[in-house]
Image (tube, rainbow, N blue to C red; front, side):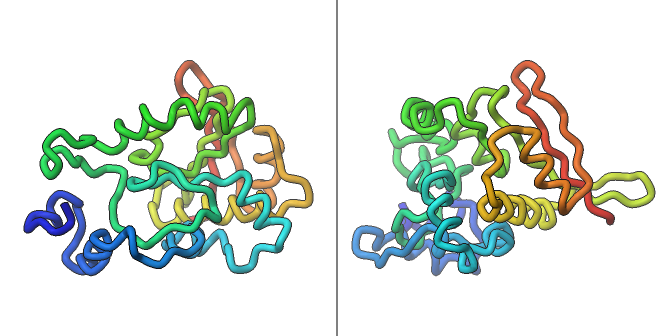
Length: 215
């Protein structure tokens, strides 16, 4: 599909990253690196993977899942090649009887293995909505992280700051003397850095952790 003339349209990418799309054509032969080195962006920069201690990196390898349009989900340290394929892509036009929208495809494929992997642990959910579609743990065991700036009583969501806050909080969790295991423990840790509000789960809506910074 990445060789087709309409690859840019199907993959929903800008012209500047078409070089990355070309990498999709050599996935089987491409060099691989730990996922935390391959994935870039505001969230991963704020997490600070290169500065994690051996203990924190071991925690990340065991506890962190990174959702992927290509792989479904990887661990923090799985070795993967560089690629370009977001969870929001619909592969039906390119593949005919292909998987269709990747969020729905992976939701079916990941449900059982992730149910076993996660068990009854608390899930600290730092994903965007497109990636959250691939797997939804039970609301009572899920804590969704939101980020706001507040100025003169008005709150505003800024995508850049939200990603940064989620990455920073993930790094704090991994570096904590004892990793938090409950909603209250995560909120207590987050309160060291932000004003914090917790909204309890209700029906199908998970617990919400609101991180509030001055705008």
